[in-house]
Structures are given as structure tokens and as C-alpha cells.
Image (cartoon, rainbow, N blue to C red; front, side):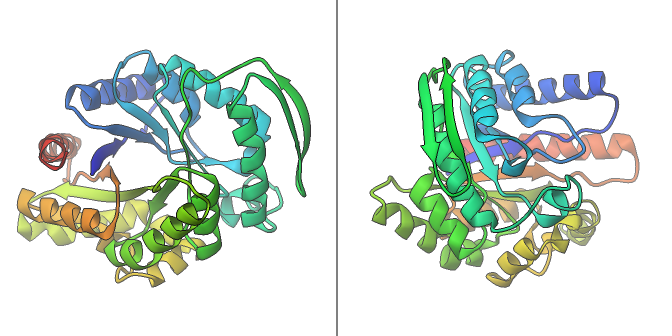
Length: 318
């Protein structure tokens, strides 16, 4: 199982924020982590531009988006941007994409959120054609009519992973992508819902076994502070629970909220949790470092302890 870390979003002004993220990616590479996952949220940096900057500061670590909302840009524009970031990173981009949620697409962007699964399937057809460049991208389907020359070609194949929570999206991810990027999925949801559906779809389509990237908050702490860590996870990460898509995924498992999903406690407890995810079929873990403390210094120290422990576990679980 590959262990990666989420980097960003960060608070503060843009200049200092970027420098902190670049320091974090330099640490992640030096610590031997497999992947860094860059969230794309509505209020923060563009994930692919951030990856391009990170690519110039690193040489080995895979750099993934988690995930780029499809409705915000035309598939040709996304293909062009992804190929550019991929080149800047020396062929180390893992492009995570997804149809996002109604409260982002419809309520924030003012765009239609009709038939997101069908839209994703049609979008992927154009995106894949663009990522194969150079050459003319000629695709006509129910959503897009595209005849667009593209001079860019990939410096290496670009893996595409699709955020897939329900059965239809898991089938699309298995048939048309290299795997899925998850959030709000516990071990039972992965073992009984995600892995069987996406794996069957990939096998039926003649594709390799898919990657399954599970995003998890993690906090190294004393046993007596586990409740504090879970409460903090619910406080700062719980807004995603308003999404029906996430609620349906939670219903597939045993967790009720993001606090229940948080791996918190000592190193042995966290290692055991990661092994349960591997046994469930997760091929990758994307760790969302979750510090606890009353002051900024305590939060910084907590984050550092957790990330050093994750680096040690990544070597053990390699």
C-alpha cells in the first residue's frame, strides 16, 4: 500500500501560503512518501498550478489532485492544463477529477448539476483524447462536440482517477479511468461497496486493477486525547457531511461522520488502522494530517509528530 499526504489548503496570504506548501512537499519527498495529494477546494489555490510549482521543487514523489471539479472548465482546457503541469513535474502527475457536489457546482458556480454521472462519462471521453495528444481531438457525444487541434503531448502517460462514491460512478471509474479517489469511506464501505464494483467494471472493460485512494484524517496522540482529535475532525472537516453523495457513502459503512473515520491514537493504533484499509482493498492512503492543541505552537508540534510517524509507517508498509 502506498502512503501519501494531503498538502493544503493553508491559511494566510498567497505568498506565505505557497512557500509553506512548497516546504511541505520538499519534506514529503525527503521523508520517502509515495504521493502528495493536493485538494482542489472552491476558495483556495488551483491544484494543478500548485502541482506545477511543486514539480519544480521535487524529483521523485507522485503529485495528485484530489480532485478537480469537471464542470468548472472545458475538457480541452483541463487536458491542456494537466499536460502542462505533468511536464513541469517530469511526468509525475496523477490527475484526480470528479463531478463535485451540487452545493459547489449549482450553488457556488451557478452551473447545471443535471445527470453528473453521464456528464462525467462524456467529459472523460474528450479528456482522454486530449491527454493522448498531440493531434486533433475529435469527439462527438451527447454532451460535447469537439474538433480541436492540440500540439501538446504527454511526457509520460497521465493516470486519471475519478472521485466515485455511488454504483454508477464506480462503474464509470472502472471502465474509463485508472481508479478512484475517496473521502468519507471507511473500511467496510471500501471492502463491500467500492472495491467490488470498481474492480468488476475494470475487469469487464479489460482494464488493469484500479487504484483505490482512501483519504483519512490522522492524528498521533495519547489515548486520552482521541476524543479531542475526533471532535476537531468533525469541527474542521465536517462540512462535507451536508452532501447527499457523502451521506450515501457513509451509509455503506459503519462510520457516522468524519470523526469516526479519523485514525487517532498511538502509533500502534494508527498502523493497525492503515493495515485494515489495506486489507479492505485500498491501494493508497492519502493522509490528512490532523493536529490538536490549544495554541499555534502546540498545533505545529502535533502536526510534526504525526507526519514523522506517517513517514516511518510508510516505510514499514511499503
